[in-house]
Structure formats: C-alpha cells, structure tokens
Length: 115
Image 1 (tube, rainbow, N blue to C red):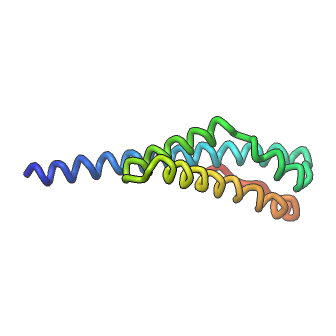
Image 2 (cartoon, helix red, strand yellow):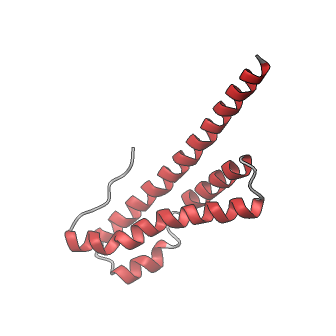
Image 3 (cartoon, rainbow, N blue to C red):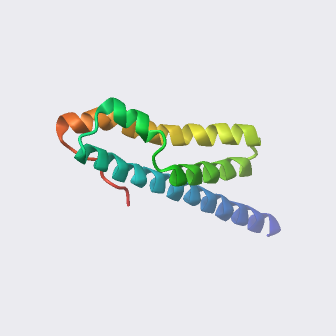
C-alpha cells in the first residue's frame, strides 16, 4: 500500500512539474507571438527581426528556462545538464519564430497564440 501511494505521489509531482514547464513554454511562445505580430505590423526586415528577437520576452524566456531546469533536475539531471537542456528548449521556441518570420512576411499571415 505504501509503495502504491509513493508511486501515485511521485506521478502527481511529475505531472505538476511537466504542466508547469508547459505553462512556461506557452507563456514564452505567446509573448513571441505578440512580438512577432508587432514587428510584422511595423514591416521590420527579416534580418532586423532575427537580431532583435534574441532579446525579446526575456522574463518569459528566463521563466521557461528556470522551470524546465527545475523539472530536469527533478529527473536526476545535473545542474549543468539541466541548464543546457532548458536553454536549448527555449532556443527552439525562439527559432520557430525567427525561422518562420520570412514566411509570415511572404504570405501576409501572422502567428496565433496558444491557449
């Protein structure tokens, strides 16, 4: 019975940290949607957007990195490994917008926020 409760508690804790990491990722992504949309409205060049986007939404980016890092350390990763992984995950979110910006310009479309 105790083993079952321990497993259930661990599973609940893991689900909570995964949900926190996903919430942080969505917050960063949605901030980048707003930033990208504003730049599309201003007709910012692709190269200028790519350069400036690196510093956009820094609070949300840092929040995502911290949350993912905490999650990874909970799974036994070292601090260095967790930091590297979390930064890579945040970089992937940013890349989706910097890489897709020219496509939005060419198609006259805009990104959409996640719910």
